[in-house]
Image (cartoon, rainbow, N blue to C red; front, side, top):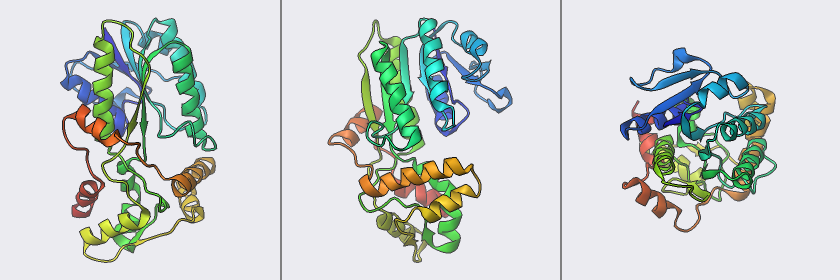
Length: 288
């Protein structure tokens, strides 16, 4: 039987596919653009998207386990619910779902609320699911590296409560471990939620200090006011998306993204290695 991976051409999804292939899984990816799906030999390509019912039905043939990753779009909720309904119709009950940290609390942030809705469907409709709840992706820092390197400002309004940023490679490897565990289980496993966090919970000023140390010159934190951040985001993405990013940043400032007791240790044990740190990722950017 096959594991179907959605969102497979993005940072997390591509790494999930690679990790599954390493572990000897039979993998199929759903993509609307097969030309972007340059995966290793043996990975099946199913053309389509999560609103194409016929393509979904075809993609789910001979599938036992689903990795569900939705991009943040205006119709994200519809995509998630339709995909899960078609999965259920096809007899697929084993799912690993990429949600978001504290999806049940940040209900004013649209994509958090959407993901909590999908979590509820998984729980109440009898799926055998692992729900992965990642914090802010360290990899997002690639988008703001020019501001840091050229202007000496760390512009992300992440506040002073602390955010335990997580590396996409760690997200993907945990996802693959859980997909294999569910796929190979002899029977139905209970729903389980795993917080995906980084090893260090950092504030805005602490992140700026890391950059200052790596670059050998002062980098300052741009502050907690999200209005400039929203304006910058709106220059290259739809205004509704930029506003959603602002709402998310406001949550960073008010609540942070702080791991529960035991989260870091649990992930380290699952991976059998330390989590990737913010500093090591930033050092790679600084050196490049």
